[in-house]
Length: 451
Image 1 (cartoon, rainbow, N blue to C red):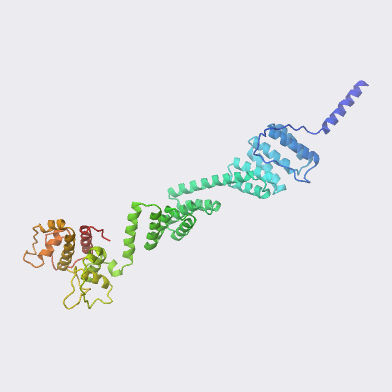
Image 2 (image 1 turned 90 degrees about the vertical axis):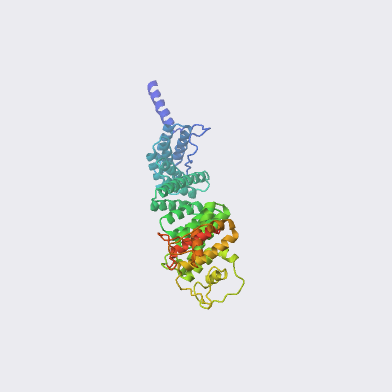
């Protein structure tokens, strides 16, 4: 009888124990504070499932993963679609470093409720652990959209986005340095998708496009960078390089000058000077641009060379008397001829003609050169003394010849050269390249750079 009563009491006690609520530990310092609490939305699960779920979360934060897993599993057993505990099991798997298993649990919860922020956040944690940063970022974005009150996620999103962007930028730069321009371009475009208003990303992509020969695309990105950050000299330098590659020297000079205004640089200043000369040369008539390749120089071309290359020197010697020239009206070199004639460097014939299309021969070239040397001597008499002290001899030109003094002066000053046998060859036509070399030497003697 007593034994029967004892058995009965054990059965009753066992039954009572089965109905007792699960114990929940008191947690003062959560073990996993970054995990988002998988709260239970209203109307989801049974009270018993909710109770087990909350106990599981308590045990998880207390650090007892087994107790947490038992309680989450018990909640799911009572309600198979109770997705908050599916998230709980996902966090337990994460804590156990079982990322793939965790991802399965989070995905199951998302299937049931695609806008359940704790599941989306936990899924992001699992993806991060698996190295899937882009997909993790998308999941975090979705979690924040689902529950904007989870402001803690915003910091994680910003950090993750910055870290991902930094990796993309490093990859893009490495590819660009290796010359893999198409791959670098793709990497920069990916980075710009995250930060479309980044001036340095637009600038670096513009440089990649420039190097690849896609100048229009390069100009678009460089212009965008300049609009976003107008005070960055590197962007203006890049714009100048793009315009230079496109052949627009005037705009290239404008951009390089803007860079110099922001940050002085001697090398860039020299580059601007050369570009200005190139721009001026490009704007010249074709008859001027072909001088250097001309087998025989014309009087109009020589006048243009003098007027353009030695303009400061010739302007200082301008004759105040009126000069009448009757055959240069409408000629491409007309303004240059007037400058050369007014300075006295080239003569107008007694019948008031210049005959601009006549070929220049070395005798005439020597006369013009000697007149320029006289202008130089007025500025630097000591330099001129060395030329006049020479005892020059030519096998084809004696000292008594009227052209001897000008020929000797031109050669002694290093402006004109003799033939291999030392002869001067008064009647030989002057080639364009020969004239350019002479004018360059005159510019050096005059103390000004040839243009």
